[in-house]
Length: 371
Image: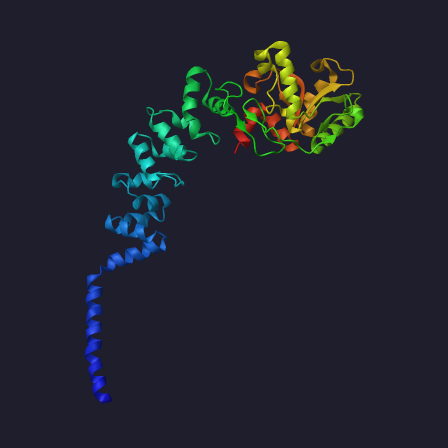
């Protein structure tokens, strides 16, 4: 009985072998190899099937893994005529990514321009760009690291109205200079010694830093306060100045939101709203609320920019971490007339960089610190 069963197994084995041979013959070995190689390159299974279907395996294998190709090949908006351009476009996580690329290419934007656009653009930004005629000099605007695709139409409009170079246009628009003071202001939520507060960027009403009182010897009324780092740097600077028979005091430093509100209202009552808006800050928009500002006077309360103390500070304040916040003839950028007494603490390393750049802090922040 057992011998009979053994004999019956042989035909079954032969049948299985035949089936395997037929399967191997039916499967294209070249396709099988291509699938293995594409899989090794980390393409998704869905992409591999499409690559094989579109007969692109040789091109894709030669290219290597390309995230944009991986996204494009399985997207419903894939356009075979754009394959070579897809391969040169940096992948970004963006709604309708491939559709947006197709539309930008159709609009005659180059691969380089599309990469610049996509670097910071949302789908809404791209829709806005596509709604206008092609911006022939878009690369001149978006070629700066700090340029924003969301602002590109504002850049174009601002350049048409002003005789500035592209770098200035991008910087000034990012500051907000193409808008009225306080219009669509940004509320700050990252609080540190480098934060930018101006007439386009505000602090929350409840913001209050940790403060220490400035020693009465270096204070106009014994009640001036600032952050500890600011006070320590100011006292160190004041003591070094004393060695040269120069003397400074803190005339005005931290002001709360409520303090600034009172000042602004008093300006409005005394001089009118237009004057107040130009020469004072709305509550929340004053640097004094940061705790990093000291309005400096000499101990005789003379007009400050005419004093020896001021001349010394112009040359040396950065060594202690302070910058002159509102320089002369920069009102169009800072929003404030020249204030020789208003010094802002940003730390020694940054103060050195700002002074070396010869830029206002508004410009420097936008170009190098705005994330």
